[in-house]
Amino acid sequence: MVSMVTLRIKVTPRASSNVVVGWLDEHREELSLKVTAPAEGGKANDAVIKLLAQDLSIPKSAIQIQRGTTSRHKLISLEVPPEVLAVWLDSLCHSSAPIKSANDG
Image 1 (cartoon, helix red, strand yellow):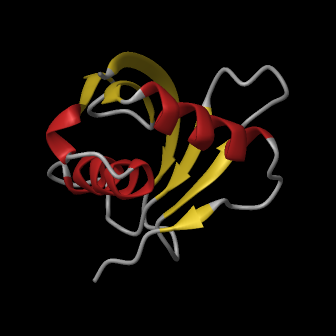
Image 2: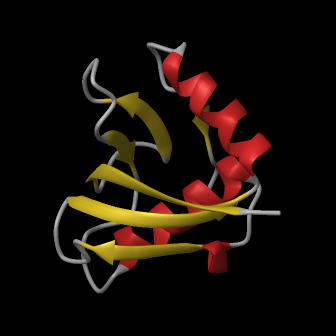
């Protein structure tokens, strides 16, 4: 069983590594991600999808950018098992440093 979840994210392209940084504020309304890809031709969007798919161990096809394909601020939807999402969100809530890095390999 999977759940459909919507998240707001802020993407920083051309970063030194691909990483889910964490929540931008204490209200946990927007998640910060950094990707090494440039914001050209959808490359950063593809990197965001790849990073989240690796972090959550879900297929890339389970992630869609609903709004913001040309913006740093995006609304994404995820189809993810509830138990996987719970663990991932818990790790975000208890971490002040980047929680995980996905290599480009």
